[in-house]
Amino acid sequence: MIDNVAKLRILYIVSSYKVGDGVSSAVYSQIFENVKHDYIVVSKWLYSSQENLNIIEFDEKKLLNELRHNKYDLIHYLKGINSNILNLVIKVLRKLHQDIPVLTTVCQNPNFNYLLLSPFELKHSSHFVFIDKTSYKEPLISFIPDNCKSQIYLVGNKNKVLSEGVEYVQRDDNKIIFGRGSTLSKCPKDMFDIFDKIDFPAKEFHIVGVPTEGNWVADEAKKRKNVTLYGFLTFNDWVEVCKKFDIFLYQLPEVCHASIDGTLGLAMWMKKPVIYYGSEAPKERFESGSNGFIAQTKDDIVKYANLLSKNFDLRKKIGEAGRDSIERKFGTLELRQQKYLNAYNRCINSSVKSFKIPLSYYFIYTRRAWKRIIREVTGIYARPQF
Image 1 (cartoon, rainbow, N blue to C red):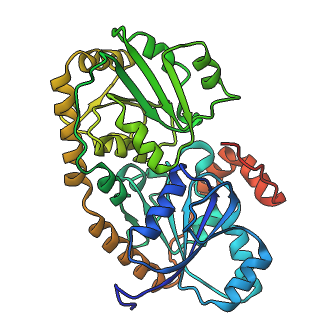
Image 2: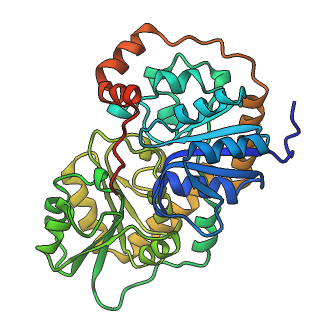
């Protein structure tokens, strides 16, 4: 057994890295908010990164050289969008006749269309971490034994530190700023229609994470004087924008790949009252009506928005309860650190996995992810556009 406080050398791998992206933020948090290990991050597609992050875009020769000169204890694969990054890294290991255990953190809903865990990912991972209970209990992957999986929330200490001392204050301009932060794929087509129905004259809608050109949200925003798009922001800039929100209006598509959702967590740390509508996993954050509102229907979104926009005391009460609930329900950074050390320990010291992938899963994967299968066979993946 390794010592729980032993310093490891970890190879982090991701499909893409871009400052402001959810999985990228999780990687950064994992490296700088956990016990400090030696590391390198390898990304199939590298868009941008922090200056203090040791990261490279995948290059076979560079990785071969790195693995020849440094012995790694563990590969930590954070799975978000699909790519063949794990396949590429395993191929390099085979050339060197190395076998490094793989821990896979599943950062999205593992039963969402094309985001299924591939048979390759299942076969080559010794341990799986799911970042919410919904994913951990997903029936589709119930064949993964309990001793090969863990559920660990992504508790962001940086969120807590940057939100210390933040108070929910009354605006002096009589406006109400409704805000949200998400990628384009999480923006439902009717979100502007919902916003229009809110009965508050001086309302604004501020949207973070969607490019300001070349998409339907940007086109719709240009038609309106009360909508502001920010595009992708650095974490610190995102915090500053979030401070200006009065209400976090978070409507997601009813069928969505959203996990517990980090942007939602930041809003709650910042004491912003939240109205949520969408898929199951983010609901784990709420005790509806106490620390936020879960809208069961789209009419409920409007109802809660009207209620909050006209009642400062209620906004303040819900916002403060939201922050308190994060610390109470999701534990501390120290607890996350210990859980990950335990997961690393189990992964490094695990024997050959005993579970088999059911034939039914192969059928489901083939039917729902056939495009990815073609990409895996050909090795041709289009560089995603953010």
